[in-house]
Length: 194
Image (cartoon, rainbow, N blue to C red; front, top):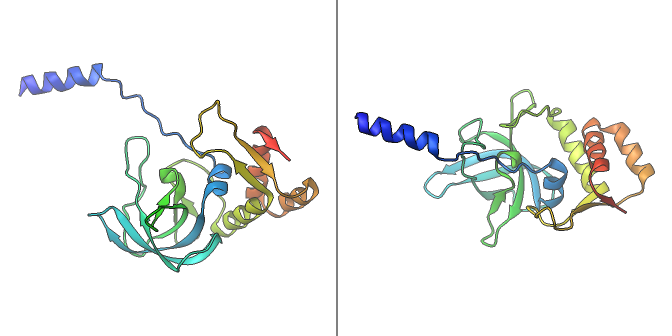
């Protein structure tokens, strides 16, 4: 037993476990998502690590009302705040896979839990607006900007946001949604091309 404890201590002090999730910003995730939906889990299959999802609202894109979502695998720097179960309400940011299923973009960043009082809960400590304001901001953002470049591009690759409408329209939208305004302000600090 002493040998086992000694080996574990040596491994613990000598291995490098400095990993960190590469968290993508919501402006990037919104732009790259094929589908953004609100709904509830209708069946969970842990043997193939996926769940069926009944959609109640399409925020971006369209699909069947019921889809299969491949679950992301948790690890030290990216955990679910709740165990997936039937009836759980979520807002999902998804990309479509070749097999027709959908995959959550960027782990916990793309799988947000909706509480009973319509607030959004996530692993990342971020202050989100209520669900209605969040959805409004996402819809406005999708009309105003598009991200050009690869989702997980290297720093040397060209990546930028393209403005899809004129600045005066964006200014009007900013007065209607504080969440849209915060994303729009963030983009002004990022690379933006007209």
